[in-house]
Length: 627
Ligand code: COA
Ligand code: AMP
Image (cartoon, rainbow, N blue to C red; front, side):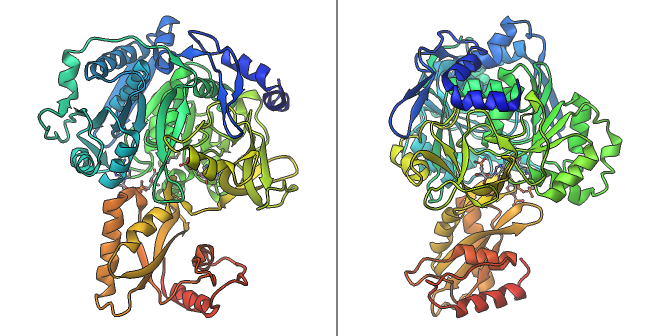
């Protein structure tokens, strides 16, 4: 079957296509219906079907002859540790940890927060939750206590699984004090906090609430999987929205498992047994889908890498890992490739390793710029494939379907619509636009399996954030255009979200923190272009009249506040003092104009601008600064 045939089946003969795909995974009860409308915005996939995602990712392989195949390889250049787990060993680890959770009173439907670095135990934790039908919510390690507290209150977990510390290059990050501070701030009370004590740094445990992971394992008994409904949530993953409060993306069980399985074959073009390495973090959606669920459900070997593309110890780390484990497919963010290119532009470190096992490099998280595409292609001599997706989708929406016949690669484009995604470009009134006209990228409803069915405890926000702006479509929040061959080019967010080193962040959230400083009258935080990280946040602040505190102290304060409140991952390091901000007559700050001036890009001055002379002031400030 060609891409065109499969794609048209997936969108026109939906029920038949998605039933066929569903039959390729193992169900306890096959679904009674494929696609069931719930209301005008929502639909359920695979109602009546029962399954267990941990069973699919682990036990199924042990039962079907893959017990001795490597399931997980842990490689940690920051600690010097390397470990390997076969599917059978993974089954032992996960069923014992599931036993611990059960003994701590965690049951089907309960939520569990996981706050851990890139160690094998984080994968065991996710799978152990899935095994007993508990809903995990992984929080990225680079977030501060406040962000963790918001998620604890929203998800109301019965237990938290955490590690005593993480390691960032050479810096040990104590996780337990961050967790303790979050638990003080949160209103929700957690029954059990289970700490994996790393040799690097042991944490103090609070009697009656905190438990030692390894100690609990000693007395645990292994437990088997429970059956869950296809529509039961597997996890909640919080992601930045355009307000200060993150959105809890729900992932259902059945649609997700089908989508994960299918994407490995059709998009990534791998075979069971291949080594698939997503060099990301389990705190992000890429990590959920392509470090944990998809490779394991598909019977591949996955790699848990605790390091960075550079400095751990050098820009040859990725090539060393590919060589050592004979990686077939690498998936990372363009920023990681740019970081390597910056330190080793001629690719000398690559010459020290044999990367001939590598068949493809997939990039996502931000647009792959043409220079990065060309550099990676000539260095690795394999197809370099940009593909586009979001936390909301959980799997690619645009890609090159390499498993069903690789299509021509057009540098700068994220590729063709993936099976089940009817992608259109619309104007602000929702009219579909002709080729090569830039607009907003939307997906015609119903959304395919695996895409978010709703937001956790916030159905109204689900509707207002994604569904009501363009009736009949899911609004992605990204701008872009299609060419005459149907390839889509993503041009960037149309809202206040920014992408810093492949991490999605909300400038609104940073503005809230900056605005809370007593010396600040008003502010705008915008994402401006950055050669390495894609974008970085920059704060533009107007001080209160009469403020007499030296600006460098205020700047330090603001940087510290954002780091303490949101986390180091925000990379908020630049604050610019201005006398005024450009606004419309109704008082709306013109953030896109600030961004264009900072990026040196042309822009159209709106007729509603309050005072046009402010733009010259801004330009002057920018020419004096080097951001
Ligand atoms: N726990 C604690 N702190 C963390 C963290 C974690 N898991 N991840 C990042 N941080 C901290 C970093 O230590 C850094 O702190 P600092 O300001 O004290 O130096 C800060 O957050 C910013 O981190 P990062 O954005 O990662 O910048 P960096 O300079 O350390 O590394 C890159 C830059 C490009 C090498 C790195 O961001 C990278 O590899 N990006 C790829 C991202 C990715 O895989 N995204 C997923 C989509 S596929
Ligand atoms: P996240 O939800 O963290 O995965 O971030 C999703 C956002 O990252 C998207 O809405 C895009 O803005 C951006 N993004 C991800 N992949 C790509 C890509 N291949 N090209 C352009 N933007 C991308």
